[in-house]
Length: 103
Image 1 (spheres, helix red, strand yellow):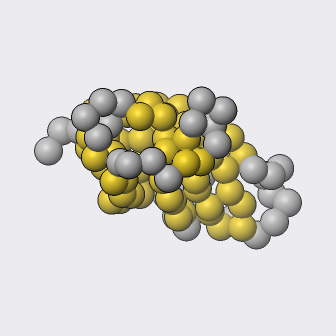
Image 2 (cartoon, rainbow, N blue to C red):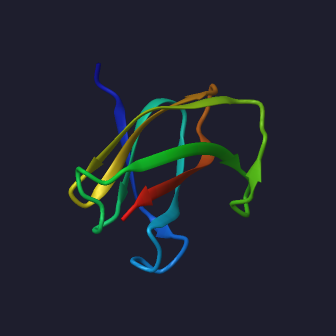
């Protein structure tokens, strides 16, 4: 299967290296099955990563929305994270993927 890949940079929630668990967000506009790719230089293939997805409004505030969205797979790699997501909507939506990772 070949999926569309959409790229962005991760926005850390806290200064890197301060705690054992850190988190951040990536914002995307997409629909269907896509690979959402965030750059994060401190991530390695062995980093433990969790992700969730939510629709956001024009101010990037989370909203429930009507679309069904799922995180299907997460791949940490040297310098970033790829997330296979399904955004079940007929047109592109603004979404936020929230990431947590262990250091």
